[in-house]
Image (cartoon, rainbow, N blue to C red):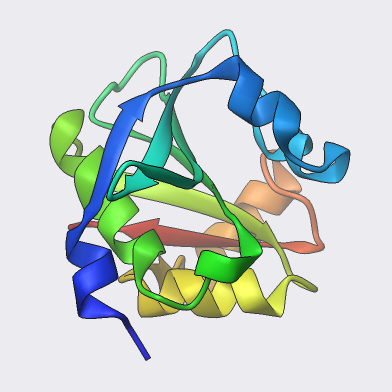
Amino acid sequence: MIDEYLQESITIDKFEKSYLDSLPSDKKEIFFNPKRGLYHILLSNKVRVGIVGIILNPKHKDYGFFQIYIEKKYRGKGILKKAAELVFKKYKLTSLIATIKKYNKASIKGHLKGGFTPVEDVVQANLIEKGYQKKDEIRLIYRG
């Protein structure tokens, strides 16, 4: 169930490398392009609950690739949805794209609950064929 109070209290703040460094080492891999990415700390009433990032398309800056990490105790509370809304509005985007490993059912479920929808199978097949997406990944899109 979504915790409406928690969701409404979510804000984004400037990125803190020290917070990223405090996360388990296997979670740092989600931030795969720190030179191009725009990252923020997710806060709930000034408490750090995760990190959200966007890697803008270099040619079309109205959409980008969405990345998020939410600490375990805060998951399932609607934070992903609020984070997507905040990033979407802050950067004046037309869409956010998430690429998730197919085995990560919890992340896929969270993104779907957060307003993301699967990209058409034919489009995903084309992306795989061209090498832009791996066979073990699913691509989801958010349009606000």
